[in-house]
Length: 468
Ligand code: FDA
Image (cartoon, helix red, strand yellow):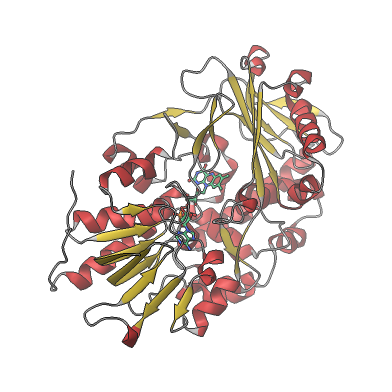
C-alpha cells in the first residue's frame, strides 16, 4: 500500500474532480486524485471504435457554457460547429416523415398553437427559477409535487403538443419519463441552460464540438497534474474525525493507495457515493438525500457511413420523432472526416424495451428508426455502436442524476453542503450547467475555492504547486 500525505484528496477523475485538483494546484496546494477506472474523464470518453473516432459520452458545447468555453481556451482546444445546413425531419405518430426548417415542427395548426402555449408556459416558469436554488421559488413545494407530465396535462388536451414539449426535457435531458420528475426539476433543468427555449433550439444547445473530442479536457487537465492522478484506484473507505492522524481531516483508502489529507473532495455522481464506507457515517441528511437522486437512462447510438448521404438530399441530419425509438438524431460527422456519422438517442422506457431484445434485433430496430428519418441507406452503416453507460460500474446511467418527485424542494438546500472536511462536487449538483460538463467544472472550482479560502492561513504540504 502506497501511503501519501496531501493537502487535498480528490475522489474521481471526471471533469469535476480534475478541475478541482487543477485549481488547487494552481493555488499552491498538494493533491492526489484517486480514480476507479483505468482512464480519466468519467462520463467524457472519446474512443476509436472499429476505426471511427466516437464520442461515447458528453460532446456538445453551447454558448451559455462560459466556464467550459474558458477551459477550452485555457487548454488550447478548438471547436467546430455541428453541421446544420438544409432541412430537418419530423416523424409524427403515424410514422409520416415531413421536412421542415427553423424550430417549429410541421404540426397541425391547432397542435402548433398548443405547443407554443406550452413552450411559453415552461419558459415563463423557468425564468422565475434560479437554477442555483430552485427550492427558493415561492411555490417550490407545490411545483415539486406535480410531475412534468401532470402539469402539461393540466394545461393542454393536445397529446402531440404535450409529448413534443415533454421530449425536450424528459427524453432529451433528464432521460426519465415525464411522469417521474417534478415540474420544478424540469424548470431547473431549463433555467440551468438559460431558458426552456434554449433546450428547444438544437442550434443553441447542441452548437459546437471539440476537435479531437471532449475527453481532451480531462486528458489535458490530468497531464497538467503531473503524476498526481492514480488510476485503477476505486476508493473503498473514508475515515474522518478523531481516528485520523493529528493535523489531518481524512484518511482515504483505495485498493493500493492510502491518502491522509486535510480535505477530501468526493467528485462522483451521487448514486455511487454510498459505495464508499464512511467512518463515521455521513449524516442522515446526506445518506437520505443521495438515495433520492438517480441517473436517467439513454442509449447514445452512433452509425458511421461511407459518406454523409443525407446531405445529398438537402437534409441537415437533424431529426425528431417523439413516437420513434430514436426520438432525436443529428449529423455527428467528425471534423475533417469524409465519412458521415449520425448520432441518435433512445431514452428511458424505450431504452428499457430495447435492452430486452437480443443485440442483433435491437440494432435492427434502432436502424429502422433511423431509416424512418433518412431513408433506407441509414440501415447499412459501416460502423455501429451503442453507448451503454448503465452497464458501467462507475457510472450506472446517463446522462446524469436528478431528484424524484418532491426531492428537490426537500433536500436541494443541502445538496452542496460540505460535511466537516468532506466536500462534494459533480455536474449532478450544479445550478448553472446542471448535468453538463460546464456544471461539473463549476462544481469542481467551487469546492477548490472553498478549500483554498480555509487554507489561506495554514502551512502547505510537500509537492504543492502546478508544474506548467
Ligand atoms: P463523472 O461521472 O464524469 O466523474 C466521476 C468520476 O468518479 C468517474 O471517473 C468515476 O470513474 C469516478 N469514480 C466513481 N466512483 C469512484 C470511487 N469509488 N473511487 C474512485 N473513483 C470513482 N454534457 C455536456 O455538457 N454535453 C453533452 O453533449 C453531454 N452528452 C452526454 C452524453 C452521454 C452519453 C453522457 C453519459 C453524458 C453526457 N453529458 C453531456 C454529461 C456530462 O458528460 C457529465 O455531466 C459530466 O461529464 C460529469 O462529470 P463529473 O466529473 O461530474 O462526473
